[in-house]
Length: 264
Length: 264
Image (tube, rainbow over all chains, first blue to last red; front, top):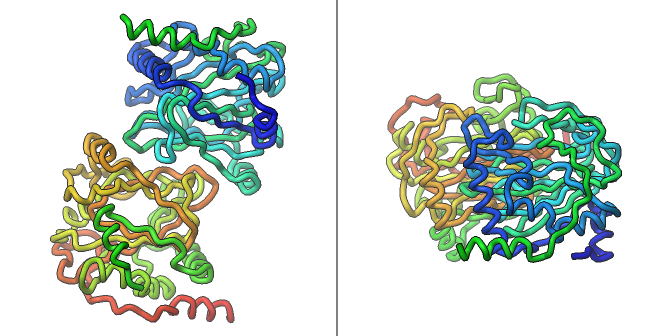
């Protein structure tokens, strides 16, 4: 899967790219079942709200076969390799459940701000590629992007340890207001199986989910191998230490596993 | 301003009606200035979040000339008189500021549920008509409706005194889920000056506003005069006791005041 020159140009200009229906309903069905099973387990990599509802499962590619395959899936790894111009390793792997009724806000931030400050990642030669496991609509807490905000580099930020369950370096209101007046705000929506690629300096947030529908998204944070982190203070299942280049698996790696499960 | 047979039919079927651009930018500019002035005053009718940010100003039609005129504006009073089939009085009048960054959730509820339980309003012969003072978009906390949910009458509800600053009778999750599976969820958006009419049994909610843009909406809750409330326990500036039929003012009542202000 190669991005076209038009797609590369749009990514460079806007800071993100939305591609609907990249994974089949069979592939998504498998991943959704496995995510549910992971959320039901009691392990330190699964973070919960005080209510007990799962919020984020980290590093599932290290302990679950379906997500191991997803972490090396060519439809995710190849476009990012192309955009970052070289081999990539997995810096972070998250399954974020913005649960029906309960899903919480993520405040305005840049991912590279956190990776640089907390992990000493040298440059923004890393990025997210997100896969929708549920349909994302305007009412179930879609990601919100400020287009073109990645062009202004890494903004000053404050370490927010209170308003979200996950420590984030968040931007101040004056900065968000200024950037949004310039670039607007978009909230890409689409069916399960769609993917979103976004620059590590793109300013983004997501609102609460008060709808009765879950909104689960898997995030692969991929980093150029030369740009690996230098500081190892966060848990190694949050900021990984394995800088080996990812070798993409065959395109049918997930559908093959789904067929196996169906046959069992 | 008369609703057409098609509009009456759509309201009956879906439970709401959205009419874009009913008020001019001159009229809206006046109301927005006056709302800002009201929020800046220290009076008991203006409710605030713990941060001090204004959330709701009640009963502004009783102490502000622009909102007094809005409360008798023919573009609001006449369509509701038509839908409720008779003269109406003002049961409640609110300017709800879902402030940029700070705007809070309103949980799923039916307005008639609160009016009936708290104020002993006999029947759902009352409804809201809402006027957007700011543009409402998918990212600044739009109202969310479950279409056709008004057809199932008043649902059981629990009195929520905790999750919002304002006591509300809210629906349980199983009920919201069932109704949304049947009717879906819509979030009407449009420019400042648009109006939304909705049935007092229509199930609705609104999410937080994490965008840098305010989202202020004025709500007139109008009730058929025969259907006035019987219990007077809430403050009289929350649930009014004046059941006099509203006499609509001329159509230019607001633009005339705006011109006067501009000339000063």
